[in-house]
View 1 (cartoon, rainbow, N blue to C red):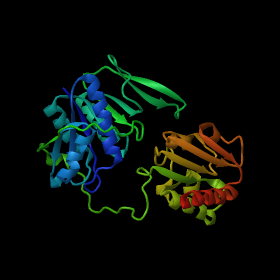
View 2: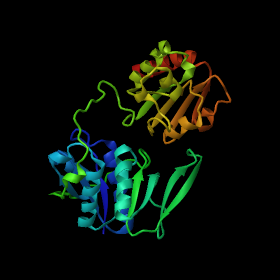
View 3: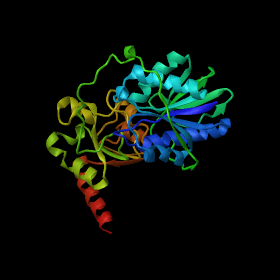
View 4: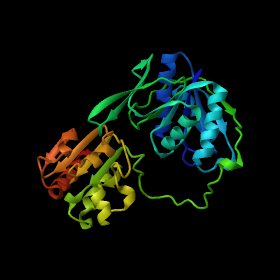
Length: 323
């Protein structure tokens, strides 16, 4: 038996979320008395692959195939399923992001395996196998009991953290069978956003809502973000009005994020928005309405006009950075 973790890479590099997944898998493996096997699909160099050993992976299955250059849910599911069979894995770990959720759900059907999405901690029990997750837009915790022999988990970003556990790691070439029938989707062009921090990667996010009153007032949001090395985001009404691009929209119908620090500036806190940012470690809310729902979710709150509070906050950050 083993714990298999799918390690996604971006242009041949692993990000923090990848190492968090391996750390999480290692903790589960210790509880089960087994080892962690990482599966890497794509052109990743040995240095990056061996770095997975710093977080507990004892083996890395390295799949390099030009046919798998771009994510293809059907083909990737087949590859993961073959890795599961090869390593006799009974727990499979994915990130709770677009690719992880897409592959995990297909794999669940293919292997007839129970699936728990958006896990926030190591299973609270292994007999029965019980996974904890947030429910009701993070207003409560739910326990998911998986009764199948093979269990699949998607881990919420920033829910577990990084835990170094250096072990000897063996990198092994793995050549799964990929059928042409599994490669029906053809990627002809990829256009990536450049020059800005991706929200899904950002440790800090500064977000604005209708309280900013218009796109002409977004300067302080961008200035604070630049000072903190943060990503910029917005609520759905803002993107719908065209004040900000749609790729900055956070919420249940936009990007679901979990930064360490989230600034909600002039955002009332509708339940749909809270559902997308509730995984944040710390939420700071600025709103002139003391009864705004955002304050119920916030760790820190400032009641005031966001257009007056932001300049003072920026000045305080500048003063602190100058020390």
